[in-house]
Image 1 (cartoon, each protein chain N blue to C red):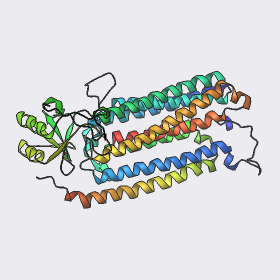
Image 2 (image 1 turned 180 degrees about the vertical axis):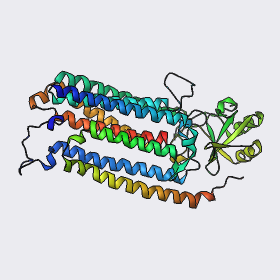
Image 3 (image 1 turned 180 degrees about the horizontal axis):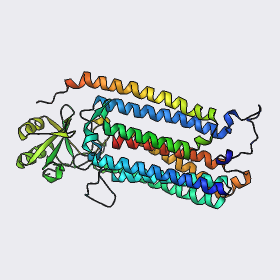
Image 4 (image 1 turned 90 degrees about the vertical axis):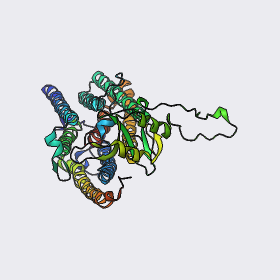
Length: 324
Length: 114
């Protein structure tokens, strides 16, 4: 029965008693208990996300309208494909990790090295992909306008969302100040490409463009497109142009949307990063023969547990942020 | 050792199951079939309930086979699974109910007519 679990040589007991508590070694049990605590932490975050989403259930942004980018396919509307690929990559790195653990049980140093190397590469690709998703999210795709009471309005034409650059002309000059320009410098906010006045002019000049508000029609589950008349009423209360996303405002909808996205995927990404660091350390130890000398590869198993936990959390984050 | 091949076979089989489930989830997420998407059940759409169930199935496979929890002692298994299975659904249920209530109480006061 112990065939799937490494037999350690640290003695049958944890320095006393007559049997290993619950049949597990100290290191492995502690890793599992840490994973339980971390799982509860992430559950707390995801439950908070669920509560906030239910609170704003009629205006929450629709995921496959926000995450539509795919590397090297500029301008192509690819909802969810890249995030699905990221999920596969992480699952695959989990598989290579488990194969490394398996090879460790048979004291096969070469195979352990090979599979751990693949796991690390998978992890690096995942973190890189997540960073790229963040970049696209922060940069924004279409641009929107924020009203005086905080609502976000977007623009559609023929049923599809269009970018501000498609109908607005920037004919003002406002320089973003840099440190070179002044004696006493404070950076201030990034200046958007267009002013509210320019957006209004562009909107009035193109009668085929309509306004889309955050509110979702409960029957069609789509955001409501308002008439030209109503659209002008909304725009009369415009406060500023919003391009991209930061913790205070974003072009997709409620600021909570971006805040939770950054916080939870950031926390998860940090866990992936620390997992990669741990994997690299163990990888080098495998290479120099530490575990051969020790007589067992239990360290690979322990770090494998952490890596699988990271994969597990991603499975849930993926479901709650992108699918549901 | 015959066991070695059997272990690797299980690993690849679980990978296959996880991949298929993920593929199904992604396809459903993109297509969003009307019947599942429009029908509400227990506060959310049938599609979302399906996603939740599939995700829990994936979690089971990862924890049981990849993390080898299935091979540990019964008492150890329980010491990991029971706290999570008790605490997480409890917290989630309470918060979902609260969030729903706050929406009912507050959303009516948002002004959509100017």
